[in-house]
Image 1 (cartoon, rainbow, N blue to C red):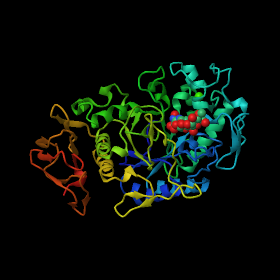
Image 2: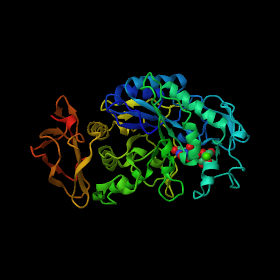
Image 3: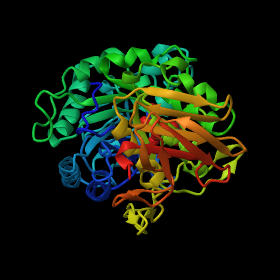
Amino acid sequence: FHNPNCADGRHTITHLFEWKWSDIAQECERFLGPYGYCGVQVSPPNENRVVTSPNRPWWERYQPVSYKLVTRSGNDQQFRDMVDRCNKQNIRIYVDVVMNHMTGSGGSGQGTGGSQWDGNSLSFPGVPFSSWDFNDASTCSTSDLNIHNYQNVQEVRNCRLVSLLDLKLSKDYVRTKVVEYLNYLIDIGVAGFRFDAAKHMWPADLYAITGQLKSLNTNYFPSGSKPFIYQEVIDMGNEPIKMSEYFGTGRVTNFVYGAKLSPVFRNQDQAKWLVNWGEGWGMPFSNDVIVFIDNHDNQRGHGAGGAVLTFRDSRRYKMATAFMLAHPYGFTRVMSSYYWDVNYVNGNDANDWIGPPTNGDMSIKDVFINSDLSCGNGWICEHRWRQIYNMVAFRNVVFGTSLVNWWDNGNYQIAFSRGNKGFIVFNLESYNLNTRLQTGLPAGQYCDVISGNYENGSCTGSSVTVNSDGTANFFIPTSAEDPMIAIHIGAKV
Ligand code: LM2
Ligand code: CA
């Protein structure tokens, strides 16, 4: 379950948070395929609670009503069309799977697919699940059945996360329903899953569930391929539940990564310490993690994982993301957000619930593409920023090489090579960088893929001349739009 199942030469996924299936299908064809991405993490595709107070928050999709594929992102047929069209462009689809719980307790209504649900009697006829299928006072010992103490493992896994009705995954029937849903998605042609709230599920239950998964659809994947699984476990080191408990069923989301990298690119922790970034910082083995700067939760203060850089601090965010994509550690995910107005009240964003851009009837707005490749209609599309998509290509070109030729100025200027295929240098100082550095690259002229593109054999931005001894002169003024330079053998003039 550790292999992402990317097509050859592709190594990064992007989370197209709250996008419609029809837009993702087009994005695979017009952008993700040609620009070298591996795949897309999609928002939960299964029927969810319709929350109207507040009005259609993004988080309603983390309250399942059934496993029918009907949401504001689209229906079953649109989901299938997306998976097929994306796979034809060598772009994989990874599904966000919410199986720890159903809706919040209390309330009742109809889900996005028209199924009834009742959070008082614990009734979900669309699956169907009934009160027998949930943890209760016999398995959870808190008086209100909610989680309060993260130091108590039993409580974290058997009680309710923010009052969400907690499924009894120890039960065969419940496992069977979840397995049916996952195998249904596998048959459609998805390449893997994000397991939401994995910390709140027993590793043994996940082991039993993943043991019943089919191999991937052979129309798109080599026979015998297993789904890629990455499990959302927020382990900042201060709780008894550890990431390592989950390596038997796939990779985990490494939240320490963005939490520790963000301060460096905010000039709060010297960049020179990145010399042994990765396992050297006490993080799990590279092959056991997926890494990212921010995600849909911590970019708006939900979940945990500290204050991370986001698109709002774009200059620093681009540098942190470029470092991530240049560095060999982990399987990389690029966040792709929509805009909302923040409104800080006592340190918290009162608008942290706001859903994706909508039309008057609350349907999700189309993603609009501007002529400069950026997005409109409220979609941020970090994955389309030049500095980011060119580093996705950099990662593809240098993949498999090791980090060599590390250089730093003892403080906030750093550089390194990836084998003899790529080189990157950052200037986070308040003075200019003007230095001769060993790039490890063959002699020649290269495009700086941060300030521009390599197009028709020439550079639209600046270029770098590598001498016959592998050295090159780098000048990065503090005033540079993006104070970093990246070159690789795929963009040689
Ligand atoms: C996750 N990872 O473990 C998701 O990444 C995260 O986005 C989900 O929480 C969470 N697990 C549950 O799947 C989000 C959001 C919560 C929201 C829940 C359920 O961060 O704020 O909770 O989805 O929609 C909301 C209300 C909360 C309320 C709950 C139940 O914010 O106050 O609890 O619904 O009604 C009374
Ligand atoms: Ca649970």
